[in-house]
Image (cartoon, rainbow, N blue to C red; front, side, top):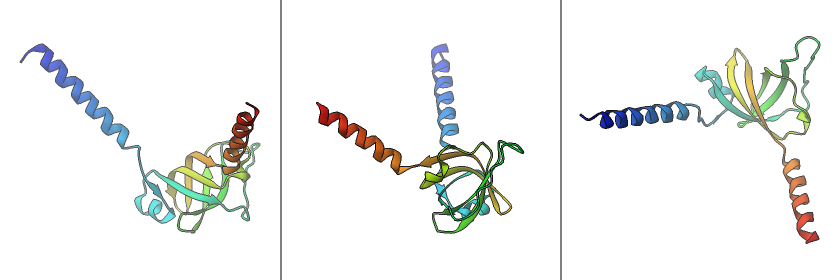
Length: 133
């Protein structure tokens, strides 16, 4: 075999390896039951339970925030987020958490908040700009 063929095969093998490693991070949304059964890192989607207590004390531990959500099946559960409490957290309607179950608590390392009011405000700004033209 020529040297160029070997280099081409090596490049293809590296590309396949990269694609396989990146595809391992893509996952579907889970609920508390599936997260507990798998015991692995999953993405959990739910809604904030505003009637339950939220516990964040930056003087004791600024990287722990405890709150409750209802998952996609309506099952309530406790969450510990291993980062500071996000601004305007109470306004979020949908939350996507990445983490794993530890006993009866979902321990999250990442969170994405979806706040429709932000998108609506942005739409209003876009519309007002087009009306001025």
